[in-house]
Length: 438
Image (cartoon, rainbow, N blue to C red):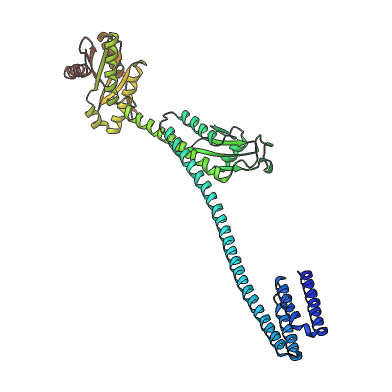
């Protein structure tokens, strides 16, 4: 800029001096030469100089005044005066134009700055929304995967299948990782670290960490314990050959999947416990009355289809109320448990011993005719009668009465076979107890 301004200043001075010299040498040509001052002002304005047009206009005005004073004719004086006034009009016109041009330029610059600022704001907002979109997209994918995994885990009734589905889901989400569920640490450095800390662990770079058993076979990994009912149920680990393959967000995601698997395992255990409680009697650990009724119907249908016999033994403790009154209810519970164990010891794997209710027991005997069932009931009766049932160091003794019925000789339905066995048990009780009626 300095070089351009110097050229403009030098050229303007030379032109001004040339015009002025011409006026001095040829004053008679003043009216013809004087307008060149206006051209000089226009040239300096075109050179984008803000001060020079005013300076040379002022100097030209002084020169014009001198020429007016020196002009001999009135017409020439008038012409020079008009040219001087015209020079100022030219200056003011150019100044007005430049002012408007400058105002437009400033307005354009302001608009450009506003637009640039808006563009920067839009770019910043776009960057933010892209990041937000990626974050929301990731959250949506995570929720979708969690929902799909939850639905699949909700249909599983085996613990092994839960672990398999967990590994499958994480393998789909982390295709570059090796996913594994382990029952124990078993010398694995990553799982051993999670075992010691009892919290999820993340190793971003295995080479940057000291290991007691030497450098492990993975570059990065994460591991966390799986707890079911607050008890350890294994360890979940993910390994990669690339350092920095996992982030804290990945650890939280894996923890969510592991938590879902743990909840599914808890549901399976609760279902098994509830099912066990519904099928087995809590005191004697024999099958419950409900399970007995269902099994009896199934066995009768099977016996009817295969045309094979089936027998039922129904038995009752003699004078059980008196036993409770004499020795207490805890002794009575102990007697029930002991008699249940004796009854179960005589049952085959295909037989079905159950607590019918109170002090009554029953035994379903597939492929047993009535005579065989009566013989088995007699052996059980003798075994019970011979048992001392020691309580606080002294024998207490107990006996049982038995009623036996059979399919298809005595009955063909579940209600009939139970009713006939109960009637025969009633006869045994009123016939002197400690006997079998069949």
